[in-house]
Length: 132
View 1 (tube, rainbow, N blue to C red):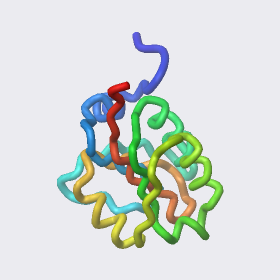
View 2: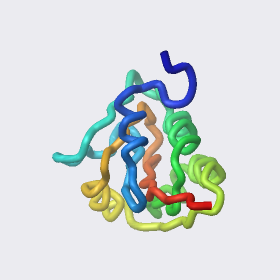
View 3: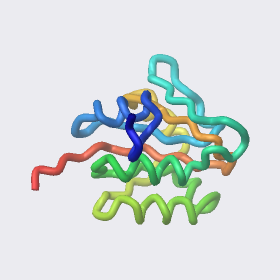
View 4: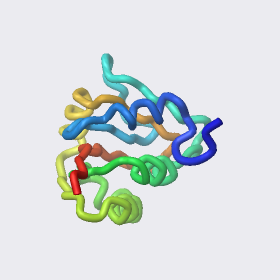
């Protein structure tokens, strides 16, 4: 039995299958789930699990070269943006409109839905590679 790291089997599989440049979306409970994009629905009840808990768990296992946030996140949830940014040292930060973030989520390998109810608590992770 696996006893550390990502325990959710679907999420662990999705993370393991990421290749360089692949997108993985982590979203709040309200982020639209595009048809055709794999859904990893972790939401249980309001706030569980939180966006930051999920981002922390995923970023512990994924090399990320770029974090894509909605411009609206700067005002709506700056603490979450700062926390996620600190979990991916060296990653480039890209700012787009919320509409653009939703449009880009259509090309994600998967969208991870959390129980977060903070508006604009969403990020697109662009998978990196570590050949060091």
